[in-house]
Length: 445
Image (tube, rainbow, N blue to C red; front, top):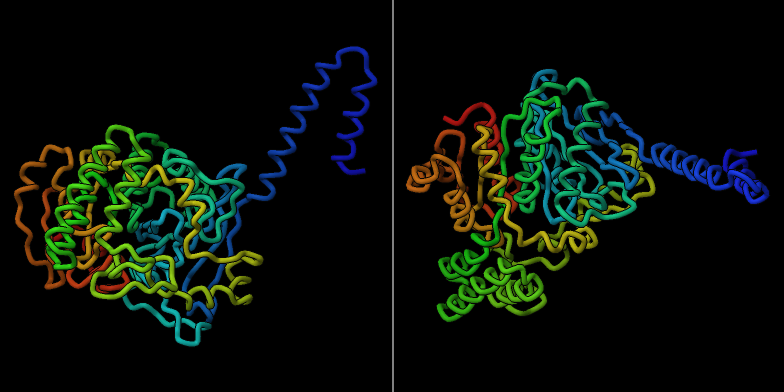
């Protein structure tokens, strides 16, 4: 007889007992709760798969699942450093959305791979970030990429706590990374994730990592500063006329004021209406909001056709190697976005300033052809950060950076504008992205 059959029989017998029934029912409920936790732990337990295989170009790679709680587990890819993996720093790279998977960065951005035209084989990216770093990608929040979930996080506080739990449990699975130099990085909506997570890590304490710094690529951090820059940037780039600029700019200021007054529905709707005014009101934007030099490709959720990644990851032999049999891959999960919809207009510049004041190394980099999180808004955010060198930093002029862009730096804070790059800098300018992270980790010269 199974354990669950015995429990059912036990409950049936409770109805026949005239005495101490309430006490026995309480014991029964505690037993059920314990078994439920035991059952969920058996489902959402840590797992890892070594994938050093010719299909994946013999990279020293592991994938797997790290349990978070009874709601699910996060899927991860760990690429060990090509040089001195036993002592190289550990860097986490998070993608945005919210709800967009890290696999896009692995196969189009700073990861080791590019998918060949046959959609079934890979070639190397010579500017992958795991040349000198142990590179960790995480499908988060719940419901993103290959991660398991029974529910979705409803706010960034939950996301941040879940990520901290991931790191704690990751170090249990990979204790060799304890006390290693650690960097937290990401792109786009990671402008929310990274500051909030970084602050939580510092304030919570107890994490056995030597937290050194954060790097944000084309990040949305504070819509109050970055929203009006939608209009300014579009006008400066001659994408809209003066009338459209004036109407959109004033409308964005109004909607931000409404948001600051906690009128989220009216303010949010108006901000999105101003976005449509700038981009054009058709189903396809007048230009690609992630790169103004090209048109939006409607075949992908982010104006790019990345169906080659979908096709590669759909192969059963690939799924088996990664340990994701039976999973359906989605570039972006709209349910995650909807669950966190109220977070889009929140301001995380205070969290970022806290990291600067805490003496972490901080770099914000922006492509000069990105509209959605453009360099004008990004520079306004970094100039407004509340720290003891704010006035001095805000007055600094941008200087040439290796012919690849312009930068300014004061103490532990750096702002970088990269030439000829859209929103996905590691894809558009992989050499610049590689040089940026290498110099950031080793020490900006």
